Length: 390
Image 1 (cartoon, rainbow, N blue to C red):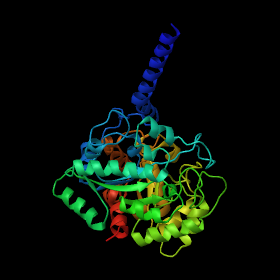
Image 2: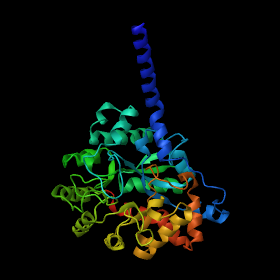
Image 3: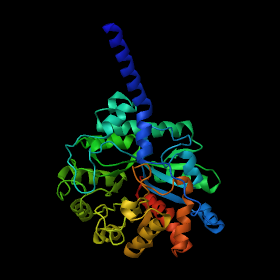
Image 4: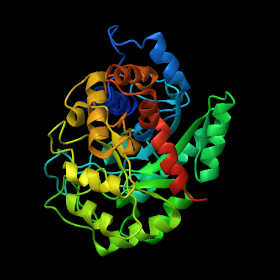
């Protein structure tokens, strides 16, 4: 009898484990990135939709690779996938790899020693074992997934590694092909694991953009959400110089203010802030002070305005448009872009298929067609054409 009870108990435990592995990660994503469809009060007018369809649209930041979905299929959760990006008329999307996130993550202070949220997610998703406990391998596994999708559907998805690749995507779209250009990025430099040689590994895997830090201080320097306003380390300086030499985009979205100042002080740097808001319009600890934003723009960088309430202080397209207007007023129309943070555990008010709601909001906010074209993608395309490897 005891033996039967034990066998039965083990069977129940096995079923529970299987259920967690099958449905657990999907449940987590549904909670953190709820599928959002605009209410009927937000449709785009015929005029706005016509303008939206003419635009070359680019976005600096989305995290769907973390969630182990086949992005070639239209999803029933989250904010982005290739079909919805096509419906939203997006030409170029930066897909970032997330490799570590501290337990209890917040905008104020996080310890680099805190337990990691991504490790159990990768195990639960049954991602390759080599990625369970290596941040470098975790980034590479996500990169491989994107490459596999591009190889499986070259008519729909094309990796952008060089300026020529960017131009080829734009030319194909101008000829009517609905191809999406994908730029691969890393949310923080910790996948380097403190070794400069690993920058070559990531570069060879297709990475062309990298943030220096994420929600915790790392080997490169301090985080905006770390412990104290630590600056760029000597290793961080080596990485910045190597990234410039390779034509990689330097992203300061989660860097400490001192890291921002240190990077800007280095000759030749032209960093971006991929997903953020304007402090003067939305005074939260997630947004840099206005003087730092102006300093980034003065070095030729661009600022991607996010789509979630913590950076624009509201949950409607009009609130995002207000953030964009504030950015234009602060740094000029040539330095403002989109940085949605789609699939990054944010409360975006619409998924990418309904991006025309933002075009409508920008029209309603009084932006000219030329300004809208710059913000929605023109500035990003110009920056990439100047920065990517030849």
